[in-house]
Length: 189
Image 1 (cartoon, rainbow, N blue to C red):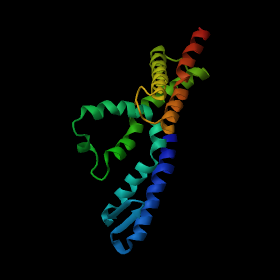
Image 2: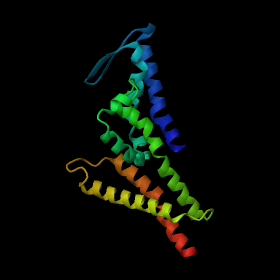
Image 3: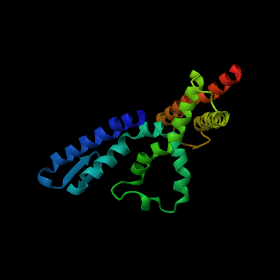
Image 4: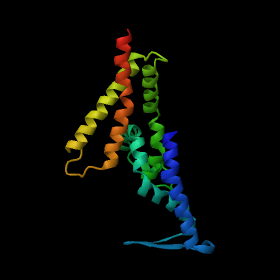
């Protein structure tokens, strides 16, 4: 639900605003000529909506990417394994936009694990130890990956992006309920 709310604010609202601006520029169904800084383009009237969605994704997608970070890690092997992933994306969307729209689906397992950990912490349900183990390994993996990213081992020579650190921090915090539930389970027994 949080991802959907952020998507509405971060992608849908700017996309609708851009679409309306393009309609105003290209009144009467005409093409719109846009010039922003060094970017100059003529956008065909039938491409207004696709351009608006893609522009919103490129400009405002970092919050969604951070929220769906485990989904991106699940999606990565699929993308690498496919020789041309653009063949199975809708033609109106570029690969980045389609990836951003499908990453929350891949992220459902991570959200479910967080829910299992929360139930274990609250004592509503005793956490099943294999799930607690998987969640604890996921938490440790995110801690390790954040350390690698901050030390520059993952992407040597690249600047540290705040949204990447925020995404790792968010999921380290969310997944921390699983090792905490495991420790609490051991204390209760």
